[in-house]
Image (cartoon, rainbow, N blue to C red; front, side, top):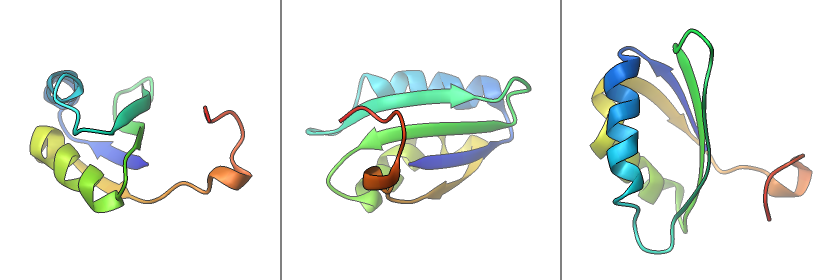
Length: 82
Protein backbone atom coordinates (compact mmCIF):
# COMPACT_ATOMS: atom_id res chain seq x y z
CA UNK A 1 0.00 0.00 0.00
CA UNK A 2 1.11 3.54 -0.68
CA UNK A 3 -0.35 6.34 1.46
CA UNK A 4 0.56 9.74 0.02
CA UNK A 5 0.36 13.34 1.15
CA UNK A 6 0.24 15.10 -2.19
CA UNK A 7 1.90 18.45 -2.87
CA UNK A 8 0.92 18.77 -6.57
CA UNK A 9 -2.12 16.65 -7.37
CA UNK A 10 -2.10 17.37 -11.11
CA UNK A 11 1.47 16.19 -11.58
CA UNK A 12 1.09 13.37 -9.06
CA UNK A 13 -1.87 11.79 -10.87
CA UNK A 14 -0.39 12.49 -14.28
CA UNK A 15 2.74 10.62 -13.20
CA UNK A 16 0.69 7.72 -11.89
CA UNK A 17 -1.34 7.50 -15.09
CA UNK A 18 1.93 7.15 -17.00
CA UNK A 19 3.16 4.66 -14.40
CA UNK A 20 0.09 2.49 -14.86
CA UNK A 21 1.22 1.72 -18.41
CA UNK A 22 4.69 0.81 -17.10
CA UNK A 23 3.88 -1.58 -14.24
CA UNK A 24 6.68 -3.97 -13.32
CA UNK A 25 6.22 -7.59 -14.39
CA UNK A 26 3.90 -9.38 -11.97
CA UNK A 27 2.51 -6.16 -10.42
CA UNK A 28 -1.20 -5.30 -10.39
CA UNK A 29 -2.75 -1.96 -9.50
CA UNK A 30 -5.81 -2.79 -7.40
CA UNK A 31 -6.97 0.63 -6.12
CA UNK A 32 -6.12 4.28 -6.72
CA UNK A 33 -8.17 6.87 -4.85
CA UNK A 34 -7.73 10.46 -3.72
CA UNK A 35 -9.39 12.58 -1.09
CA UNK A 36 -11.84 15.15 -2.44
CA UNK A 37 -9.38 17.99 -1.94
CA UNK A 38 -6.55 16.04 -3.60
CA UNK A 39 -4.24 16.30 -0.59
CA UNK A 40 -4.22 12.56 0.24
CA UNK A 41 -4.06 9.44 -1.90
CA UNK A 42 -4.22 5.70 -1.29
CA UNK A 43 -2.89 3.23 -3.84
CA UNK A 44 -2.95 -0.53 -3.48
CA UNK A 45 -0.49 -2.31 -5.73
CA UNK A 46 0.29 -6.01 -5.51
CA UNK A 47 3.91 -6.92 -6.08
CA UNK A 48 6.47 -9.31 -4.68
CA UNK A 49 8.04 -6.64 -2.45
CA UNK A 50 7.27 -3.34 -0.79
CA UNK A 51 10.66 -2.07 -1.95
CA UNK A 52 9.74 -2.85 -5.55
CA UNK A 53 6.57 -0.79 -5.20
CA UNK A 54 8.51 2.03 -3.53
CA UNK A 55 11.07 2.24 -6.34
CA UNK A 56 8.41 2.13 -9.04
CA UNK A 57 6.13 4.66 -7.35
CA UNK A 58 8.90 7.12 -6.46
CA UNK A 59 10.19 7.09 -10.02
CA UNK A 60 6.86 8.25 -11.39
CA UNK A 61 5.33 10.41 -8.65
CA UNK A 62 7.82 10.79 -5.80
CA UNK A 63 8.59 14.43 -6.52
CA UNK A 64 4.94 15.39 -6.03
CA UNK A 65 4.12 13.67 -2.73
CA UNK A 66 5.48 12.28 0.49
CA UNK A 67 4.53 8.62 0.57
CA UNK A 68 4.55 5.87 3.18
CA UNK A 69 4.78 2.28 1.96
CA UNK A 70 3.68 -0.82 3.83
CA UNK A 71 2.42 -4.33 3.30
CA UNK A 72 -1.32 -4.73 3.80
CA UNK A 73 -2.67 -7.24 6.30
CA UNK A 74 -4.86 -9.03 3.76
CA UNK A 75 -6.12 -11.56 6.31
CA UNK A 76 -7.82 -8.79 8.28
CA UNK A 77 -8.80 -6.53 5.38
CA UNK A 78 -12.36 -5.90 4.27
CA UNK A 79 -13.15 -5.47 0.59
CA UNK A 80 -9.74 -6.15 -0.90
CA UNK A 81 -9.80 -8.24 -4.07
CA UNK A 82 -8.19 -11.64 -3.58
